[in-house]
Amino acid sequence: MRVITGTARGRVLKTLEGDDVRPTTDRVKEAIFSIIQFEIEGRRVLDLFAGSGQLGIEALSRGAAFATFTDMSAESVDTVKKNLISTKLDRQSEVIRTEAVAFLKSNRKKFDIIFMDPPYSKGILQNTLPYAVQNVNDGGVIICEHPYGEEMPQTVGHFSVYRDYKYGKIGITVYRISEEESR
Image (tube, rainbow, N blue to C red):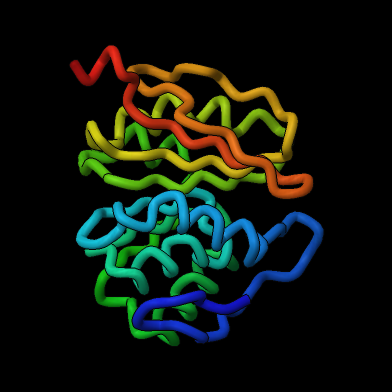
């Protein structure tokens, strides 16, 4: 797994081992960053369920101002920190070991981009989304990775599905502020 482009282009990232880990494929990562390519520079990013941190690191490499990484796993947090140091992006970031909903409930900062890629098919995404929308700026975006075909809510707070994408067995759902809400 490598950083695709930007200041850390080509850097190899450490990954986690085990059956519970499912890193985002390069194809899906490229697609995600193609969707938001003009929205990254200078933005604040939240990488929930960070795993190895590859989505937040890619955003930093492409010019995001700051990234917050959260994960419950001590091993994941350690891996993210190592990857941030190896890419020289550690000064533009913070890594927090915490459960996602607990973080979102206590957080006081707003983010422009939130990446959500939790363990699949456990309802975690659907349970976390209502808290995520409270932590994103108007005009921001929430990007959810999930198994293709998994039922995702059409609206969450004042955000609604902007687009759904399919990449093999993986689905990407992008949420943005509802048209009616932005008027």
